Length: 585
Image (cartoon, rainbow, N blue to C red; front, side, top):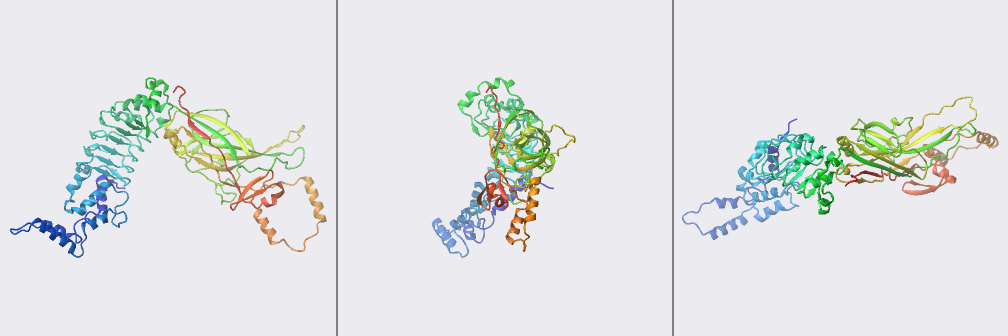
């Protein structure tokens, strides 16, 4: 697939300005004004005042022509059909006004000298060609959000002071530094694919002696000590952006950079205050305090809104009957290669992280995976996802019994030295899932002639939510969220009758008289509506149906059977995810 050069994008930009078409340029709408200027005075030439009066009379009196003021209004008014698109620059507007006032000036040589700034954003440019050298007065070149992977600095005008290359596909700086513009003051390389330590050597005063501002955000620099030692040679550097790189996750990053670059005024879009500089004074002389590992702490708080399951009941009334148990826990992911310490001894399961997130859908049937209505016999069936983006581990909190507010009280410290993998994980975020585990527990017996086996527990996802962690790469020390997992569609649970209930039912059936007619339509509708719904027994709770609130208890279980949706809200599921700074700082 062929690409687009920067000069070709410039030509397309000039074509969109319509400099030779109405209301710009010379045409029937203003021809007499310019024909009059071309006339040379003869021997009996009239005075200049007379010529001006004649020109004014001819301009106003010629049918089909517009006045200069009207034409300028056509190109300057935002409501005009000839107005410029919103993405055009003030220079574009000025050039159009010149095309109205003096269209004879609009020639290639004039245009190359006119522009001091070129803004070519998101145009699919993948090459900076030598035709840009024709812009002899160019001081600012903005080529953001294109597809440039390599720049030959010999094709850049020597007058450049600002070069913005944010959002491209640049993987190396060697070609850019072969013959860099000597007067460059700002270099923007954010959101590219720079590979870190191999490119540090190009960030020195040898290549950029006059650099005042440098943007290296959201690349893959991992060596904090190495890059700071190179940047220290840039004596005129006042603004630096490193956020989004893996190295910002190192404890003490900001303080070390501030103390190592004493002339720096702005770091990561934040002013450096005198108090902050005083606080970190002397840290640059202690590089041994700066490690190469990042530490994050994850706290899982509490869960609210889980429907009350049936109280543990015996499947058959008897001393050997098993008891149904329900327990709940929360899962979340973290990058795979880590050294983890926790206070809960929670389980860890390896899996491939995907950026696809399953969210509950209020309108889905009970078997829909989005709502977590279906049950499975293994946790892996809950974790089925699309092809992997990053490898990660899934962590589980301790299992808790049902309560109106389930206290997870989970805290885990994650430590990893793979900063690049950690950055990719934070960019993708994590998924929080509330899981219900249903099993049976055998009663203790004094003598057991037959060994009874329990079935594996049934796992059901009550809902999942995505947590965005990208802000940890931009300077935030804490991410605190409340995950609202939406509406949970409960399932119908049927308890088999006990032997006493069976005997009582048989006696009632014998004494019951047969009905002469069939069921009423109303009772048929109620029966159909109750299928797939949850008849929740136990404490009083609030349910939501069609935007109205209903209250029910044990006595009103029949009415509850017709309610399809139970609101499930998970509070503080991923309560804190923060980077702990060094204790010495």
